[in-house]
Image 1: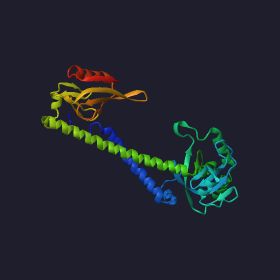
Image 2: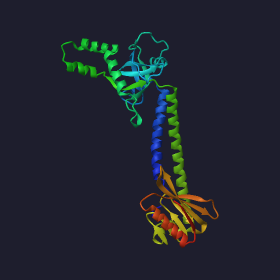
Image 3: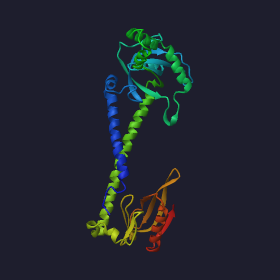
Image 4: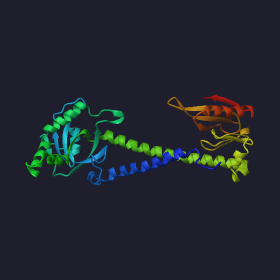
Length: 345
């Protein structure tokens, strides 16, 4: 047997490390959003079609469209947006448009040319299919997007510019290749992040930091508990400090699958952590099971101590024949050492 203060803590430690790394990334992202301009973040690579979700675009032209759909609220419309890398739909209200173009003065024209203004704005990309296969863009709406693109003034202007640039005598492949440099994408649309989006984002960041904090606290707590249990063992049985394997060699009872043994007058559980219980220290033990979604995931022993506070200890995770091993341990404690044993599992 090897002494380990991390016994029963490896999974929590692994999760804690993952969440620490995640927290560092979240904190950096939060810091960048608060300290760096949209233009700087865009030029650093956080661009629409290069990163998903919350990202940035350089707005060049905006065209109001006549698309009608049940997904639109009373103050929303769909717009065709020309950005640095192509064309995409925008679902927005007038207030959203003001935020996008960074102006309270919206022209009455259906076409808003912004090429000379160098406007970089945050957007949220809504994909055709969301979580769990949810459809954000129905086939009917996608068809409306494609139909609107065929009649879009800014896309027609783009086609005209290509013809002027490469001439009329070039092949169809030449035109297609040039069009693909700035394509129209219909598998997602953009929205302008509002207060609700930022509140949810900040809430998620706070949650990740809290989970990280409590995981670290749990790891520290488990290490301290294991250390205290080992120290208690070594005080009672000094020979075990020099040779921990003596517990296994001279055990009165041992179940290696359950990772439970009885050495002299002590019960030792070394599966989910390290726990040292003097047999004279408790008169009753109750075995319970821990379930998750109707499935047994682990077994817990509740020791009713004579002189100290009662203690609950996780004995083992559920495995094949684990209940039989629990029954065997309970039988030994009851018949050999006269303990009251109760099963709630």
